[in-house]
Length: 163
Image 1 (spheres, one colour):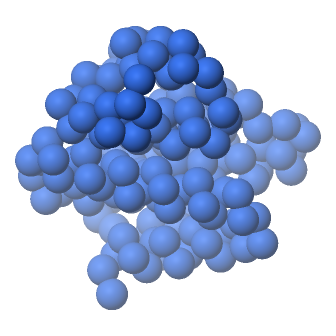
Image 2 (cartoon, one colour):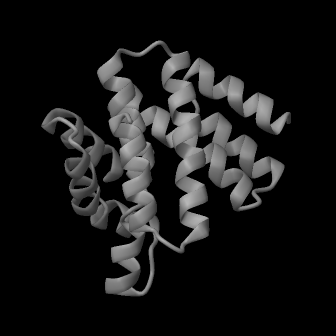
């Protein structure tokens, strides 16, 4: 089994019983991997994108436990530590873990996107959240116009939402 597949299992264990969170990260991972491959990124960047997509929301659980809420900023601040632990458990390199944790810590910060890997995570997360949150067509289009930069992400948005 690949490291990313092992990470999926470990993250499912982390969220055990939380159907919504498990379904969410599986979808974000699938779309992030598709975008990364569509953009023809190198193997290490694809691995980083995949790992980050799998663990991007692990900050929700400690945020809810500590603060009784899990807004985007709390997810970003509380996510890197459990993300690191999960990735380390399955044997990711320090370089991949460092960057993936950075992505976890910034996936709700849409200004100053500093790399294609963060851009992809933001796009994949939006594609899933737009559906799960029941965004209006105008909110979806606003997100599309303000957030999407990759050719593959734009194509997926068009295919999924057809607006």
